[in-house]
Length: 231
Image (cartoon, rainbow, N blue to C red; front, side):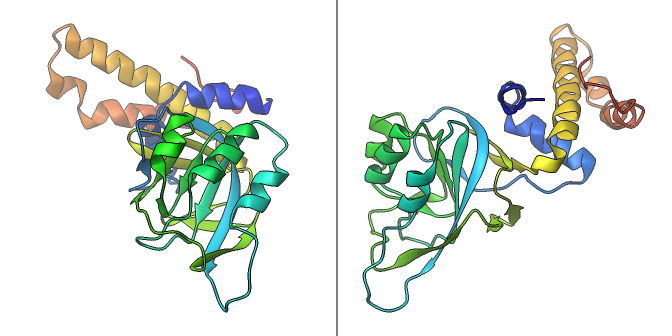
């Protein structure tokens, strides 16, 4: 399956459904607190990981994140940034403009952004913990890129899959994406049916009984290895 097909399937879902699939599979990936910093659209893509840390010493350094943006060559990337500091920015409008030109799909920051109007004015999606005006300059530096990072308690690897919307941000390990997508699509189909049942007048107590959700787990466990996950 090509990356584009995977991203199309992921983009047809939402973070709630993907989080439910991860729960059923007992996998990490769902986070709390990484939400849109302006009224930006949902993003799906593959992670380009960046680790920040406090600056040591006074020597000039290349501005954080800019080397990663400069090296991007595909249009499936989401910048995933760890190591932010409370009250200090690790994203701004100049970086947003550079990322937009490179075709990067958005940024997810375990930290804060400044100049958020600049990102909004060019429709560049930014997800993170909050907004500040305090610059990262002389406070934070880039420690590494393309390496495993910890984002809101989840280990994210380079090329893992990312989905972020108004409810938050979810990461899916690249090695498990097929399994997660197949189950998430089944969950979406079943839950849509449950919504229709309630609208048709069925008792919400019956529709939302635990047995109905357990059936999703049993359906998944009984799938053959080549089952695509669609009902």
